[in-house]
Amino acid sequence: MEPDRSHAPSPQGGALARRLAEATTVDELCDAVMDHLQAAGMPLPSLYLERGGRLRCRAQRGYWQVQDGILPGAGVIGTCYSTGEPASIEPATSEHYVEAAPNVQAEACVPIRYGGTVIGVVNVESQTTLPADAVAQLQRAATVFVAGLRAIGGPEPESAAQQLARHGARLAELSDSRDICAYLLEASRELSGMCSAAIVLLDEHGVPSVRDQIGPLSDPSERIPDQDLRSIASWVATGSSCYTVGDPSGVGFPGNEFFRAIGANALVVLPLDARGSRLGVLIIGDGHAVMPPTEVVERLELLVNQASSCLLTAAAMGELRERAARDPLTGLGHHATFHARLGVARRAGDSYRYQAVLLVDVDGFKDVNDRFGHVTGDQVLVEVSAALAGALRDGDEFYRIGGDEFATVVGVSDLDDAVQVGERLIAAVAATGRTTASLGIAVRCAGESDTAVLTRADQALYAAKAAGRNTVRGMWQTTPQDLCPAPPRKTSAARQS
Image (tube, rainbow, N blue to C red; front, side, top):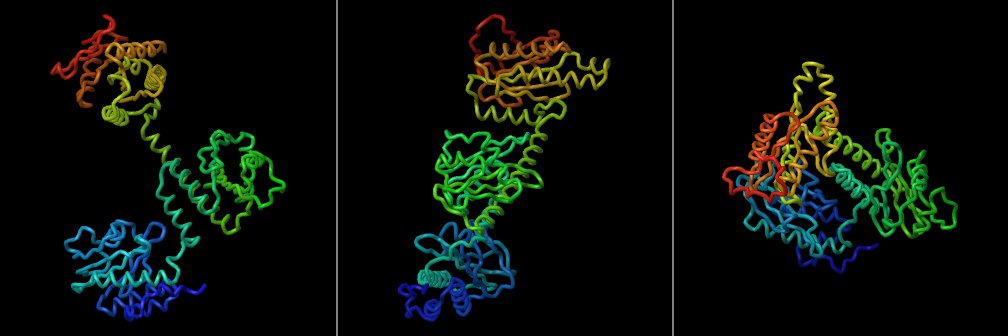
């Protein structure tokens, strides 16, 4: 197609405008602007255009090397792009300057606007001072550049390679499997041009289930039958993809009936494989009976390869985080995770009226170790931890914070409620038949710090141990007493120290 010269820069705009009027590509436009600025006394000019969320250097003069792929907001160039405001700075006094070329004394940058949107910047650096009208010169150059860009049909569309690189870079930034799956769904729809997508993941036994889905063909009420999920996973057992060929009356593989029934007349199925492991499959669908071009399928295969590797890495990192947050003997959270939970509880509050901190100490545990050995002692701790965790409400969690000391934070309506929780816990420990436990409770007062409430819970635990084995003691009041008004009492059985 011939360029539209009806919007070409006017010859009255000078030599730059005339050269831009002759340009037929974006690169020729960029080169013309760079030659003009250098001839005008700008020693180190550069022109960046946005591509895939980063600023790419399309032309420059005077450099041996350049920085590329600049993020919006980074340095003078990224800041000018993200704010849409021109800038003229001295590196020695600017917080936005990012050193590249040596001995730069001045830098100026202006945005390039096309159709009301900032699409890039024109920048210049100098190892001496810049002309007083440097920003104005850059703005005029940007204006005639946009006129030339309009004349050749506007900015270049993103190429397939650039599109794939953008998605790959974004996937590499994600560390949560949910975010990776959500991004993969959107990216696969964009690359394929299809309307819907679903991710099917395999559990440790190889049983498939839908992890996430998106688009008009992904009605949650339309559950894919388990047998169909297994059949779909088998479609790519020996290949890198499986897809429909645009013939609605053609013969399909086992398991296709569900998709035809919901109006999916085109499908692409790709395996999620990484490092020899099959994680699941990606299903992309559309209502139009089309056969995807081979080059599109190949790009989708590259996309799922990247996403699969990211999913496997995210799973490994999640497992490491989980291990780091757990006591290796009991599987409970440890001292650090308990204190983190206590802080979260303080900041977030609770659906209950109050929060109670409960500390549990195994009675006579030193004697167990001394008489029967540490292996037996460890077995006792495992049984006690299981008993404590099993006696809590769903959503509450116990932590092993010391050798034979455990802790939890729970929501309660008052101190009596907290004491009843404590009595249920020590009863569960006694039911193991291996040992008993003492338990101290402190109900958090308004504005009370983590350290303060833990100190009171510890005091209550000491009181429980002093009173004998298999005992609960609860502490409500603190000093000053008006910090924590006494709660309503339901019975006289509640124990308070």
